[in-house]
Image 1: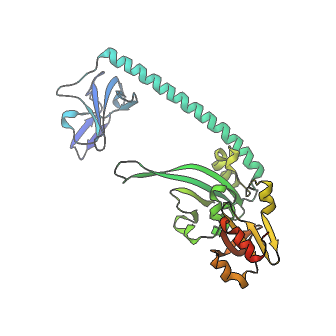
Image 2 (image 1 turned 60 degrees about the horizontal axis):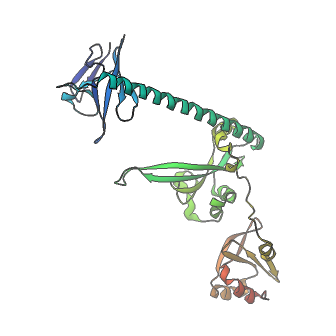
Image 3 (image 1 turned 180 degrees about the vertical axis):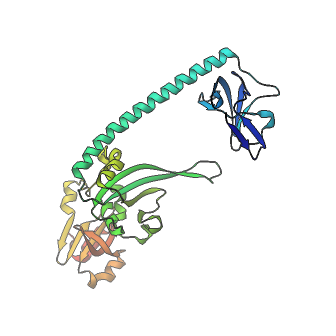
Length: 332
């Protein structure tokens, strides 16, 4: 026998006393205006008292409880049996509802079992893949994560952040955290390549050395530490089960023969390259013509990347290419 005391309601529930019967309607009061109707389909008694088995009339979800209070004395969140007068469901309808609920519960359990088996299969593939490529002395794994934040109520006061994808960008042999290592790994994924360029605004120290616009939405990069090698493998096995989620080197963009021919042009002390789809970059001894380059709309950047190394140079829109070529004597 168990007794429950409610300080707020000023009531006592003795589970040794049966307060409701089979087929009787129960009201479940939740927060706010949440209210569900259930029916008792079985009442059991054991050494702890009475246990009531219920099924939700709307969702067909099966529940059980040993605490039922009269609805006429409702005082807050809880389960209440209808009284004054008591409300009952037809026994045949209740039996049909229970059969439907039990089949639904079985189908859900089978679906969960199949999902777990598939999860385990993919994780086993990922674990084997990681054991082949992860260094023995690994102390950190650099991850890129794509998060989205959604508001969960019409008032926009409550929101939920959900992780959509995780990509393994690299392994580290030190547990020390720093933004340089994250920026280098960012180039391995096209979606995060823009983070490879230094930008202090993307250094999110308050969230534990995270690189990105925000850890709550969009892509961000951080370093996972404090695991053993097997710990890393266990934690990342399912992610690694999809080989697209492992990007350990920078992708080489496909280019047409015409693009390859004009990708890099050398003239005297100048090197002109196609820096991106929308920009060109000029490297070399540009100091004597810096004013002219600026007049053309160029922007000097001391941390551009050329052949894998940081290099100072000028960035221009692709539309300015012919004017830049004329200035440095490459036209024609």
